[in-house]
Length: 484
Image 1: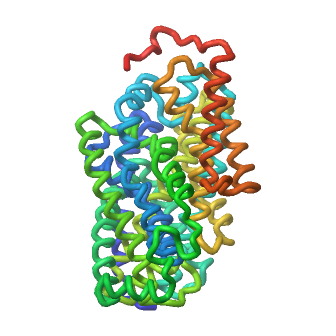
Image 2: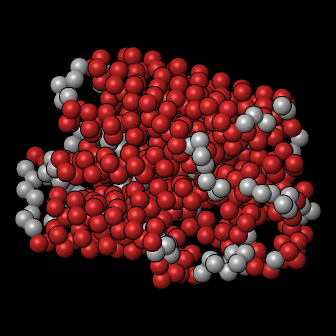
Image 3: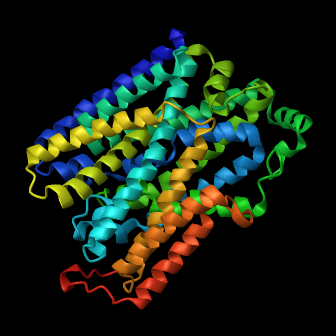
């Protein structure tokens, strides 16, 4: 083991646990356990809101899988990845105030709370939504745990299984003890680490490659396609690249892990500050990380597993002590995403299934015990799922993104902006979206040259509108009507 690399990472993990124990005091003192554990009592300021959105969205896919794919595809993947620049801005612009008003009016703690209240307390919508979150978020969580384990494996020389076990134990413990507040505060620390780490690795890689012009020349000599927008084999067609923006741009509005942030800020001023900060930070990190993946190719030409590019190039171009500090960035990205996803699935099981359908009269003590127990069991299940990882985890992560967007994009957006939409349209949209996405993804991927998520989103929109118009309008009491 290279202790010069590992020691800074140990310090980083310890600091995360300190934040978790600090946050646990709020859990003990809170009069509303569910709101504190799953939403941090809606007290996020602008900087923390921006950083927690960035850190949650900037995941193992961005720091491990993204550079790994860019290493293979070339500069075309960098162009494609930059569709994510406007993600934070677009999300808060669409959801922002309106979604927060509804969430507070309905006393919603989860996305499913909002959907159930908006659509006439439909139990069917609650169950389909909870099922979709549990299934697709599991895929996303598995991708993050694979990324964390591969990073630890690369740094320590431990076996993949041992590295996965260490990562799993760390995440489960600190999510259980701190809840959402611990996640949000550590996300802020991790967001800063991600920003600085990206800058240092990018500079080190460019210097090691002899400058940008020299790196580009080396790439062109190896394969001219690596410096074109079309990928190493010409597969990144304009139709595919432009449609990919739906998956990593517009569609991010529907991701439950993002929507929960839009209901947790404390003021409009905080949200406006987060719009600007989040957009700048996301843009820099996405550009920097994917450029690093491409620029690493002439320096380390024969890497077998793309997901190992980031730790390998970092240890190649930086002194060991600095590599250890900088590699806290991808570890931060992975931990900040996986803790949010773990909490999200836990809230779906506890709040949206257990309290609504199994034991509505559960005491505060029982709710705490079930929340901690469910979080632990979910962590163990994801650990088991991650034992057999794919070669490039980005595809597992993007599969989960597409499934969640197909399920939730129109029930969320149309629920905010089209009062005629009803529970029948929302349910049809979710069922059609998820089923068509699974079919297209497995049997007709990239149909007509566009990404697999495009047609399911179109089908789910048609289902929402047509079924809502053909069925009786939902009756909403005057107390639930909201001013735009």
